[in-house]
Amino acid sequence: MSQQALVAAAAGDDPADGLRAVRALRELADRLEALQVERARRLGWSWQDIAGALGVSRQAVHKKHNRRI
Amino acid sequence: MFETFTKDARSAVVDAQLVARAAHSDQIDTRHLLVALAECDGPARTAMTDGGVDVAELVARTRTNIEAGDALDPAALAAVGIDLDEVTRRTEETFGAGALTRAGRILRGRRKHIPFTADAKKSLELALREAIRLGSKEIHGGHLLLGLTRAESPARRILSDAGADVERVRHLAEGGSAAA
Image 1 (tube, each protein chain N blue to C red):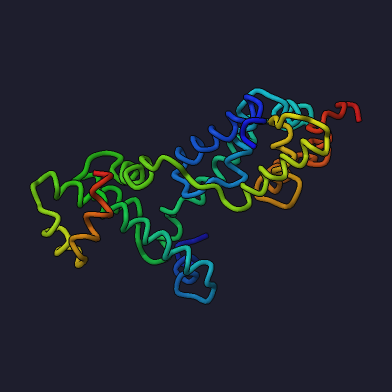
Image 2: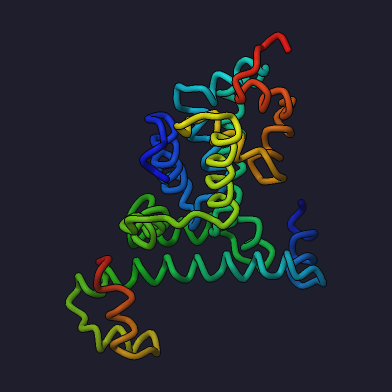
């Protein structure tokens, strides 16, 4: 599919294409979040600081990342 | 039910997890099981080979098909104006080579257990029924293959897209002769 056709698909009418794009964006955001949180912790950021930057509660960010980092 | 699995059937179920992990899959579906069966020595692979399936090609094709379903889908991102290559390049400047792939592993890799789709679970139940129907006390890889292909499923579709005569492969998996 050409770039133009893809852009048309995303902005267009087929929910399957639109939802696929949303899923990919969420996955990308999750991966970037994992990398950024890992690095912030290594640089000495507190869970509170990270939570503030992400706009979520400290509990939420701690629960999501503490075990895997 | 797991106790009655033969060694090859057990490894297929375990290896399906490895296939899923390698492809960063969220779930294990019938395609992961098919790859695991095709890669492991046993009645399932024999049935496929005797049925004229190029097993190496089938494995490569199925893995590609599974990876195309990776959630970090470049085409889908391009559709909303995001160039994944560029994101990857910038991410690697800060986080090092392969950072996004590593992040996928951070998200999933340590998860001990990747869940089976309903479809894949159903195929294991069907394998049990196939074994009973064929009067076998054990469930071997051939029965798993029968379970995977008994109804319409991603695995069955991939087999037939690879040019396999699915009914013939099923016949061979039932222990039928190659001449039939």
